Image 1 (cartoon, helix red, strand yellow):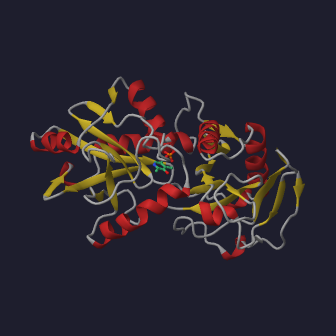
Image 2: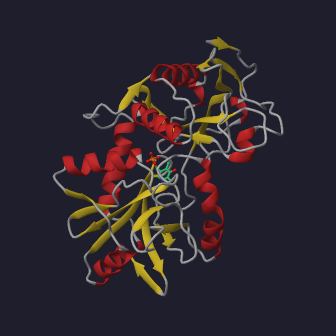
Amino acid sequence: MQITKTYPSRLSEIDLENLGFGEVFSDHMFSVEYMNGEWTLPQILPFGKIEILPTLCSLHYGQVVFEGLKAFNSKNGINIFRPEKYHERLNKSCQRLCIPQVSFDMFMEGLVELLKLDRNWIPRKKGYSLYIRPFIFATDSFLGVKVSRTYRFMVVTSPVGAYYKEGFNPIRLMTSGNYVRAVKGGLGAAKAPANYAATLLPAEEAKKKGFSQVLWLDGVEKKYIEESGAMNVFFLIDDKLVTPPLEGTILEGVTRNTVINLAKDWGMDVEERRISIDEVISASNEGRLKEVFGTGTAAVISPVGEIQHNNTLITINGKKTGAFSQKLFDEITGIQYGEKEDKFGWCYPV
Ligand SMILES: *Cc1c(COP(=O)(O)O)cnc(C)c1O
């Protein structure tokens, strides 16, 4: 690997005790180019501008995938949470978008070198972490729809605080009557910017109405719940945990998997099955809907306090964070910060 260090560090300008999400970027970035059928020499460079042609094909046709994972400055040193899972998903996304795969060794080598170099950028404050953003984009220069022959894989990192300005307070979701996010056979299960492009307008409309996000329903019957924003969703009905199944339209969240593993380990029934918005409303009317929460790397657990569907607004757990959501949040962050036993081996030491 070729390493070009920056000097002086910009860290002195940053308050690591007072951060938003994704607004500041660490000193260095990782970059490797793909050409003639192989990944070339990996590099670490000072974070900064990159030069591209206006005819860069990914700008025009969207052949791009990304990931989002976190590193923690824990009691036991620096760790990355479940990098194998994120790497696996990156390659699944690549496969769907005709982008060449990235080996686990190259992925980890890039991450580890970057973290070692920018170790002082990893916040120590509880609730804070270093967000890691790997992404791959097509770099051929042409106009016309076809698969690119060249690519660039990059990793940037960002010290972050809470994802939602609400912090760990419940958010409000609404279904959308006019829009869908994904359909079977589409890109829904890939972590690709194209999915987000489709959701910007509906999310803006929801925000204008006072909601944090859209709760997506399936694209065919507009009946079954899918996911929300950058989160998978869970429903605690009676003592059962229910979450939509992986049928190709929603993202296979790593946090979703973490929650399912923990809940099963605690002896709970977890059902990965279709759940309609009507079932959720009925469960709420019958007093059986105990909690609703979203899961994602950025926010970990996001309690949901209200859901609006057509003319019905349901309130969950008196708009307060539920005990189960809190327990999950405490357990996952406890493992990440080295305060709780990591019995599943999720923390990858750097
Ligand atoms: C990233 C993402 C999630 C959450 O996945 P995690 O691996 O838990 O971060 C959920 N839905 C979408 C659409 C996403 O892009």
